[in-house]
Image (cartoon, rainbow, N blue to C red; front, side, top):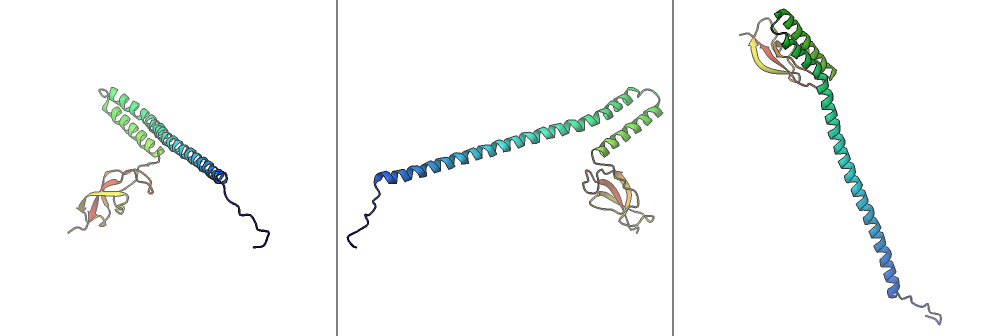
Amino acid sequence: MSGQEMPERELDGEGAAEGETDTAKQVAELEDLWRRTAAELDNFRKRCARDIVRAREQERASVASRWLPVLDNLERALEHAVSDSDQIVEGVRAVHQQAVAVLTDLGYPRRDDETGKPFNPAHHEAVGTIADADLVPGTIAHVVRPGYGPDSEVLRPATVIVATRSE
């Protein structure tokens, strides 16, 4: 090169150490940020878990409190068990209606599955078959146990006996 040469810049130990210090600071800051974020996420997860437990407990208490009047009325019916049997039967019917109303209020109404309706495996559980000339094969011949819940969310399917062809 000519007489004016550019002096070569040599990195002395001080410049390299300063670059390493800046990098180390950035790494430490990022690591601190990462740890804080991880801790916040863990706290959020724990808070959500506590909220779920609390919501379940509140819902259980709500459902149980809805059943308390039914239990009270059953106890009253049992207190009068030695009196007139007609009144007891009437009282038990009233408690039964009250219990069905509680399930309906909870979103699980009693299903009206009647004899002659088509069997639907999504809403019915067949426990037997019977040959009956009066009924169309594949229809309900007898409801053994009623089902509860709307079409979209069956709580319990109805237990039924299904009609088959008579031989």
